[in-house]
Length: 449
Image 1 (cartoon, one colour):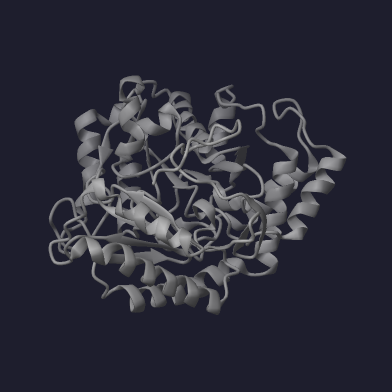
Image 2 (image 1 turned 135 degrees about the horizontal axis):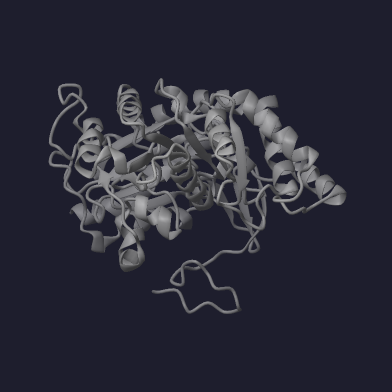
């Protein structure tokens, strides 16, 4: 039965979805007004990294709001904003990092794209306007981020409105788009960047943007270890800026503060979001190497990107309190340790289940891809909407996951993500994986009969 048209006056994000009313949350548990409890095994949308209901974070926000809640970020700064930037600089391995504070991952990536263009212009490279992206990537909901993003379901309705950008294939070894195997492939997927640069003309390329660990569109796909150093070398050779989108995979999610630390490279521009404020405030960050900001300064320019709520004092208080909480409780270390255990449980429990094609991930960011046939990796018919079947059945059992589709070819390829807060316990991990296995048997086995 389809959900009835919603009452009230909220314009919901999904009109064909029933919305339980959550009135309280603690740890990894959400509590609805009817008393139902949900294990939040996805941290919402892979957002909540410190757990729900942390009093110290709420107290820090309230105290800042009492002192000063808002000033125009173009005209004033605040002590808490300066302190937060200093604290971030101490742990973010970007040379002399400068942090630009906005509100959403989309906005952080939009700012990064604009900054890349402005830096190239400051260098006298006025033709450099193209930003290359990857297929099956997601960078946001604005027209510019949809242009560089490669998630077909997000782009299709708006293609007539988009100034589109070129895309290369992602490093998906489970489904190599070139039909090759690593390492014999010689990283064809990485070298496709150089071929694309040559095709469009290096003098026209401003930047390349991608996620160090792919997010929901590819469900925690981890590239080969030498992929990113190869990409970095190509960008350097052609004077192209490298943007690492860590909106989902950053803020300690992968067991390092920055996901790029796993891969022996350093980007020019970094974006973060989601976990930087633990879900308690709409906060995102665009960070740049100090030398880039200096180039802009010496060219007599400011960044041509602003927003009413950028550099927000309460947002900075939330971010700083979350950062301190992560450090005091070693939640980055917990993400690494517990993530390894979660991966073991997922592999042990799911690998042999019919319909499970691949289990992949790093830290507390894991994905499961469903297939109709394991040997051929044939995806399910998109019309079956397998990922949401799994999600709905899990929700009915009190387990919240993060579904997606398009991992195979942009349209088909059902996936589910597991990304709990770093405060998850061993017993809770066991419960999450056990329930997920039960749900997979319940929803997918009948489709294979």
